[in-house]
Image (spheres, rainbow, N blue to C red):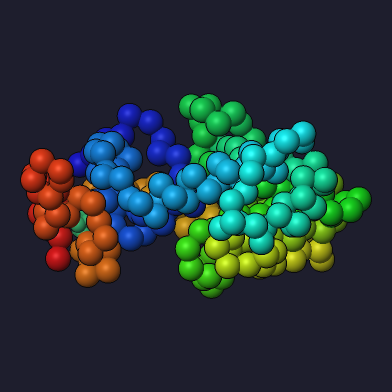
Length: 237
Ligand code: SF4
């Protein structure tokens, strides 16, 4: 049995990995075994950084190459709306806000960009590189919506959206919340408490191999690192 020294804080991506395979979670976040670099992930990080500095820099934003020329008008609109970028929000188990590295932190949410639309209305966005998959992204946007509303309880309307920057000129709206926001917050809090419970209770972090998960897992014994050593997981299929 593993006895983590402290509460394991979760984020949407951590939760996704635990859902996929708890052993992968253990290798990655508890044992902190390095993963080989993944070109799509590295590109995603670079694009996020570029868009962040483009939206944040008020005087001379960095040049957007041809690849992202289609994003310029909407980025200008966002820049004019005093956005907050790479916003880090952390919560305790009772959803009270705490500092990002507070020992009692239970949930962490990082928001790519959020800005006002008009008085009492805001929009929270997630930049997405790669394929357009709103059905796969709707759930995480609900968590970002919840975090936005917990931070700004005065809002009367919130839009959440995914911006498929490789394909689309504007963000796609995935959620509009304006009626009974209190109810939305309560329902989402309950939902995420249920979703996080298996991770919070886990002591074994047992492998749940599947072709899909193992096929792309850096820890599979069927994969070798640059020195030719196989990954640590013998359960891989
Ligand atoms: S190889 Fe498969 S079983 Fe092993 S950690 Fe990765 S996903 Fe889990």
